[in-house]
Amino acid sequence: MFTAWTEALKNGHQIIDTFKLSIKQIIQPFVAVKGGLIPALHKVQKEFGFLNKESIKTLAKSFNISDAEVIDVITYYDDFKLEKQGEYIIKVCQAEACQSLGCRELWDTLRSHFQLEQDGTSKDYSVTLKEVFCLGNCALSPSVMINKDVIGRANSQKILAYLSTKQNNSKND
Image (cartoon, rainbow, N blue to C red; front, side, top):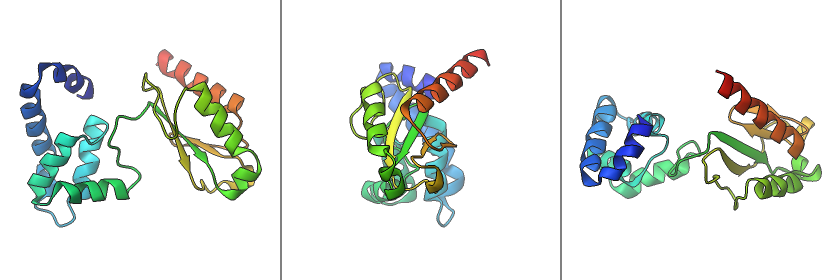
């Protein structure tokens, strides 16, 4: 559905009304439930990949709260995204153990390789690079998490080889 929605954006305002209706249908089971905002946010993000301005407005109106209250919840939790993320989310640990074993250099190398600013997403949406503070893998520092896989004793060659393998496997599927 995300691809269809992206293509339909070219049609302007008509798609916004369709998008709002789609969001209302998605969140309808959660609106009357106490604490339903968070499951509704998860459901909308799962459907569209991120939470944009129109989804925030529709959620706020449906839950009878302000846009700011919805944004407060979104920005409090790291799992909610306000922008489209890359296919591969690369989280580089910046905790003390990882710093002592070269995570800053790894961060700089990856950022340079993917031509990104701090915490950025590549133009082709293949990767998003994020700094995190502790992946709980200190004994194997520096640590990197790519999507749900944790990689210990990480270096740029190991990370790039992992991504290459994943991309080749997804092409073969």
